[in-house]
Length: 227
Image (tube, rainbow, N blue to C red; front, side):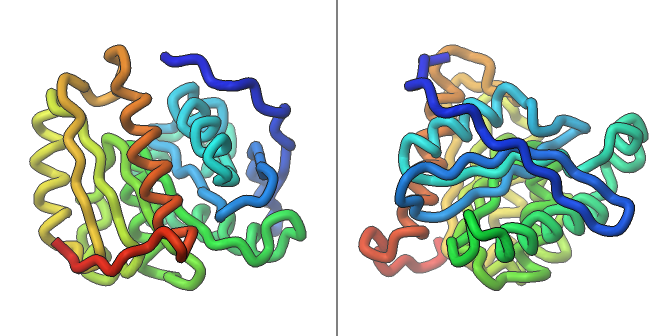
């Protein structure tokens, strides 16, 4: 991976709701354009090296980030919870509500970055509560897991898939057709599902940054029609 300029140590935060406690990392650069909540997939969490790489890239483009564990440690060991998209979407919405109240992020436009199963959760959350949601990006995602919600997604949505990730390409193409919002699908040549090949994750990060900047900053927006 390309080395990125060293950022400040992220702030450790905890989101509480009743007995539930979700730990996360919050990073707010100077004069942020907006903030992105990362919805991790397949039991991954705030320490995901790939999502942390993308988050650092976004931060250098004046986009704040929240990497949050959507599951508690006990829940993460339960494969049923890992694939419970309704539960994961509930947790994404919990993070959104927290950002809307926290003094460091209150008033910022919000975006979602979903990876793998987390993409399904992010898209469901965007459909269920569209307020303040300005953009969504899916990396190697399973948007098909939110199939019933896709026609209701209003936020501009980018689907990024590896060119060698053939089953997931087909799932994303089917999901893309169901989206009626401004949308774009990007296929990264030579990349497999985890974007481990040299330079491929950097391409994901660059596409995501430009998408979020476009919709967080009204000055950069141009009128787009759904494709």
